[in-house]
Image 1: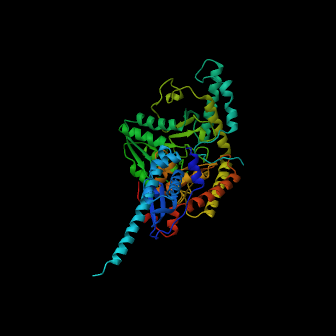
Image 2: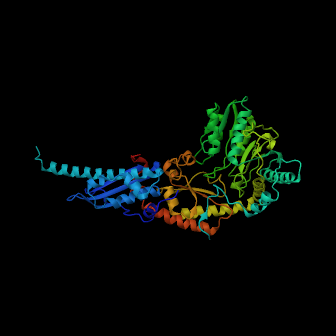
Image 3: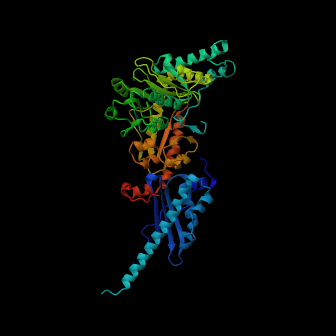
Length: 141
Length: 404
């Protein structure tokens, strides 16, 4: 199977490989896929709580070249976007940008799932933080 | 050293130049049809075919009349299994095979199942071999054929065919073996192994594509097969169609070379294969050999590189031609059914690479492949969330994965 130049570029020079501190309340982590299916993506976003803008994004992927490229591209796109803008990223955008063939569309779906999971995790943490603050403010009976 | 490096000799082999030389006159000079009985063009072609038949027979310890030429091993497997099932229908309707067989055997058996035959697919043990006790237990008075491969095309594991042959003989059941990967690589004798039918292919032993043979036992017992291709009654009526003379000459020449060189070549190959294996193990942790190391073809190595996906590994070594059992290298999105059958887990099937060494593999190439693979595996592990989790002490088997 021939890969597009963009897939090869992301595979050879992946952007934003690494990990962010997953216990940080401003970091959201998404872990999607399964080893027995042949692909697992971990995608993390670090959000500025004041502005709601994603300051940093990192990934690690176990998967084929297209899966690596999809997650690498996703982290590139996430940086500088607000959380709501990030949620608007569609797998079809990734397919178009990387010229993925039909058998590789699931890689882009996984990347979209990873974005959504990371942001859901961030929101959950923020909610808990908010909840914790409110709970602390409540006078104890 | 020339790049790219070919290390996928189980898929196919280049034609040996000595084989090409033997074939060439049969395209333009001696182009006759061996079925032409009344002129010298036909006689020359027939003589060449009979010489080749003798060369193939000699390689497998057969009688010259027991070799039927086909278009390849897929056809030979189809002819053996369908031909026997049809011919011995009244005797029984049960076939025994195994889950790691080549698709040419499995799909042929599935087709027969649709036509009402019963097929038992024996599992394999962790080392890739069938259990002889399970084979014995599967035999019934309706069993007409056992078909078990001599050597596996992915993991190179040798099945205990001599023992299977003895069991089949004792029970009066025909024994067919797909011997494509074994013939010319390891000693294979139809009488020592009590084989009744054996398939082989030229392009796996440095001969041309599009030609193969089926060994059909003529004595004790005399095996009969229902023809699957009807026509002029060639090849003792079992396989009609004008003979592919240049191809057959090539198969014969390739068989003669394999017979002459097997003893030294298999030692050379297993030494290189063991060096490849040792160097990879020296450089990398958590790599696992798939299948028996004891009962194995001398030129095969199949390794899983844990936490790294096979296709991404192949992408990183794109100047080395090898295969992976990863789903991503197939259209089906299913990892190798052979590796799955070993029960090691689908994740290891996704991480596997098959190395097939051959006649032109050099030590220099082995060194290059080791260097390159080591670098790529390390790089991809740095990128692998699984490797990171394991290093953090997470037990991957206890994780709740979000499957898709």
